[in-house]
Image (cartoon, rainbow, N blue to C red):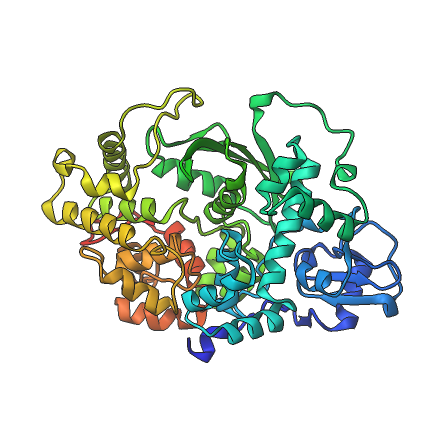
Length: 515
């Protein structure tokens, strides 16, 4: 990856010109309990041995007793314990290092989905997947997070367990399994050492009982603003019948994970800057992966203010950002599902693509699933089912049917196909090697499924139309790419704003034409 890709113009370690690791700036943020810094820094207090969020309601410690860290993992590696009042596990999971190191950002996404569940041995494989050496990956983590990859994974595990203890009624044995601890003994020892008390002592007595079938409800904090209406509109327009739906002000879908089946429902708590996630799933070990998928779909980790500030340096984009300050880049629930949707959407409208997806699901699934919430009856088919299905009933051109088969076979051959691989350019080249996947489709998959923040489908006619001059002259894809160069590393968000500003109906494209 070239050096300018690793270094964003708006580095995540600055806020309006203040260096987050500058003690004076950090201490001022702590004194004022500045919410802009929540999730961006953590303060370890030497006199208590505890680390806090900058918004902690406790009395502000003396400056000489404060040690500022870029991540919770760095604070814990220095021997500080999480604060029980401000609960670091509930801080916005901001990727403040994004833009400073795209490699670290992509590594964190993989860690959230279990890439380091095997401990230190997994670091080499993770580094290889990202196209860097293991020593370089450790150096980048130390530089941008102040902690090793394994320490970051371990801290995430502990904080997720703490959240399950305090926000759910799950038995502690299930909490240990769900958060990735190898044994109950290890779980108890970790909490005793870190919190100086048994896990059960952290459970809040004020919690009301819930029905056994109520599922697990968690709150995912985001950094405002958040354009929830735009997110729901996007998901509603593409909801596949039986698999997902927007019901009232919430999004619901079926979940097939690790051989088990369940559902997830996501709603919004704007007053608390939370998404409320209700998961009904029997296999508790799958909870971290499901939560990671929710974060990906709803783009919870975006530092939307920093992204907006960067894009607003372009006078044209500044107006679009001002109109939609909380616009996110929706992610994909599953990479294969997104790739299939993209191929089905070639040369047809969003509505037509949605209908084709519904027909594909009905064709490849054995039948409706009983016992699910109203309106949810099916799961999206696996690559195996699509690869072996007779797609003739879909009534699509033979080239698109062949592309579906090729995509399914590629997903079977490489289970990691839809995870970041090497540089953005290398990942897109791998996707383009699949029959029926051109530049637009590969960029679209990279944007939605791989969560590459710099993916940019410059040939999209809607982007070209939105980027037209006042006289109506549209740029060429090459000209739009040149114009978008200053938007790095957030071109995916620039694309989202351009799609939202699309002035009219989109004509047919030779490839996927909708955002």
